[in-house]
Picture 1 (cartoon, rainbow, N blue to C red):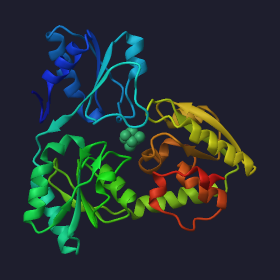
Picture 2 (cartoon, rainbow, N blue to C red):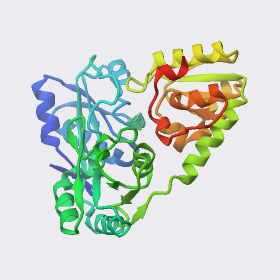
Picture 3 (cartoon, rainbow, N blue to C red):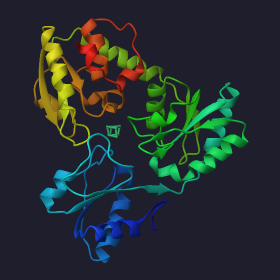
Picture 4 (cartoon, protein in one colour):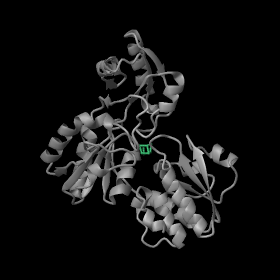
Length: 337
Ligand code: SF4
């Protein structure tokens, strides 16, 4: 195992995977918080005889694998650090190894506090969620929850027990409440919006435990939808990232808007930036078919109000009745008929 700061990564697995597939030239990529691990792994793989390039791209998630980048550089395979696997369509043009980067930060003090708070709030059946960096602690977390008097439930995502990613929280389906072990509030907020139930975040890096408050996020969504109801023109953003591209959804959105007399056009982007959208000209509102979290966490990337496809039905109806925060994530084409 290779240690880089407080993280470890299985460098032997990376090397044996590449040897097994007879790959000589590799692209190594990682999300921003753990880029130093990619640099260290690349150094070790170079010493082992591989020809390695480290990507400086964001590599936001399993949706964002640098296939085109690898192919243009002549790399024969991609080692993607820090995510569990593909999100969205699988990449098949080139071999990809998803390699977990495991944190050594002890999640237990924060987790214990979070579980005790959930118990004292009257929730006993507690779903446990972990990001990939902390998934090796799951067994210990379940044991600890039981000892504290909780009835832990752990679902799965893509075969990984307890795993949560920013746009998928099926692991938490069975709980009355959830405790998510993750750095920051990003995954906790997503879990609370997705499940509609109380969520506590236990942050192993700060040792803090706190209940997630969705009020501000939901208020911002409702405000954006209300403003979009009055818009006459819409730019519909479709991502060119392999796992975020939902072209058919974007086309349905354009059709639905045009049918109701609104002006709508498709805009393709790799990274969604305010500058790129401003350069493309004025739209009164935006529909985001790329990463659903952009509308929640980074709405300022859009020069006007932004809604996700699942929220568009309220724009078309002209009212907010029945709004659910789950509309951030879920889309049903029948709602646009
Ligand atoms: S939350 Fe966004 S960046 Fe993360 S996996 Fe989902 S689509 Fe990708």
